[in-house]
Amino acid sequence: MTEFDTDRGSLNAGLAIAGLLAGSVLLLAAGRAPANGHRNGRAAALPPRRSSRKRPTVVAARRLNRAAGVLAASVLADSSVEHYRGSFKNKAMYTPLIVSASTLATSLHGTADARPAAHWFRDATYLTAAVSGLIGTGFHIYNVGKKVGGFSWQNFFYGAPIGAPMAILLSGLLGFCSERVRESRKGTRPEIFQLPAGRTMAAVIGAGLLGTSGEAGLLHFRGAFHNPFMLLPVTLPPLGAALLGRAALAGPGQQHRATRWWMRVLAAMGFAGVGLHAYGVSRNMGGWRNWSQNILNGPPLPAPPSFAGLALAGLAALELMEDHPDA
Image 1 (cartoon, rainbow, N blue to C red):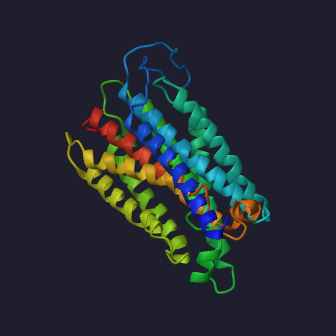
Image 2 (tube, one colour):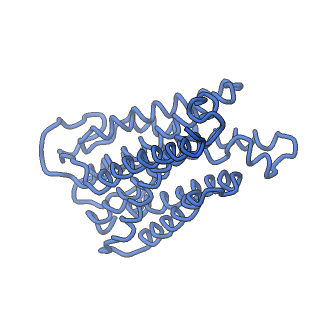
Image 3 (cartoon, rainbow, N blue to C red):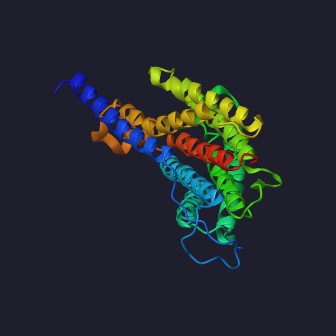
């Protein structure tokens, strides 16, 4: 088989994977997650698991748990590959693996929990993730600054990615906010730190999309945008952030249909990016036959789903605003 045929076969395989993933996330994002409403309760005495009417706040909280889990899974896989490539030179490099794995497990627990009460252990795990994300960002900034030349383009391109730890910060923040939404009393406005929960989350997620897009833009600029698809993560997410910002500032009663559809597009882009990165790995010398080296040196396979996690969180915030117009 010629090199051209091999590349074409890899492209077709990558696009097939991307199509399957995109279709799955569209179905996932378009559907409303089933959740049963229950009596009010506190974390100290969670209410029993009984079928009742759906509670919009619990539905929204479980969606946020799911979004936090997607982000945590992306961080777990990405940090495992990148820190393995760095030979875990600093023992602190094990921290994001432990924290993201714990956050993922906690998010799965929250997604399965249909009770309208916050859980103290989930709160503690999510807060730990947020703090570790801040500390990790500091470590990465220090890593870049200590290299010869300091804060130069060369070091930004090839040093520790400054924006990477912010993903676990966002995962922890989304999870912690999901618990605040979950424990909202029936008949009251869901709030986060006395702010309307839906609009606050829309603003936070919009900022997260901008930051994630900036990180992707830096690395794709390093790759000279040699593939037109590399423009997608630096053009589509900022538009999504603008739409979420408008939703956050809009008054009650708005439908935000265009914003919801854009979030679904971003979710599909995030999962389809795995297929495109897989194609990028296949184009390196040896292709997938040399996977042990090319996965480390090719485009990061686990990175694109971070966009999907933020988009799913955006959908949760928009649905909450629809169910609670004053949120």
